[in-house]
Image (tube, rainbow, N blue to C red; front, side, top):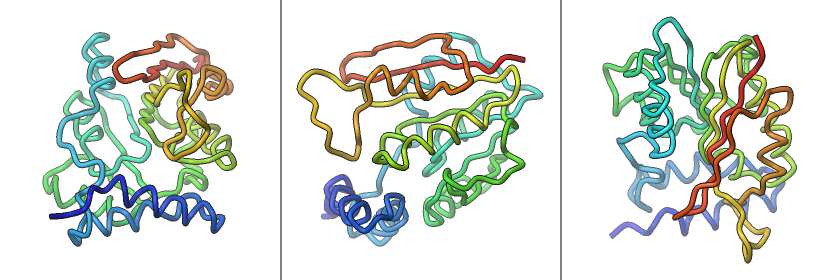
Length: 216
């Protein structure tokens, strides 16, 4: 039976952070999932619950608009946004994850890319009407988390929206990670030059769901 992937993730992340390569563990983890060394990480076909709830509650439609999923993994969220009508890009630093996403969705309309959040293509800056960030920045220590946060916000087009879902820091949480649970000040700083439209502190489990918008 394959080992649980989150245990291996802890080991690989600790090694990478200690070596000064805090993003260097993601592809190793997906590769371990593909070989069966561990169960497949972040393995789901349905969209992330807090994303789907927000989209349905606001009747978000994408016709004529572009969306991007940061750290898209195996593609469930990107495929969901495409079904909602968005021209969707999904990117991940892990080549293995991007290849598996394409293989899982052979008829996809999603533009899957291998890209580093800390070194994004210049043509993506300010290019997306909807940016979705779920659990990516909290996988990074600071540094380079602050740089990653600025990069996420920079993807938002004029008049566009960023939706971020992260683990929420509660009493008794330590500072260790990943994942690093985030407090309100970090979620507010993620806004950068965006406006915070709504900040929800969700429970069971403790999560943030925050909507940001760039002025048009």
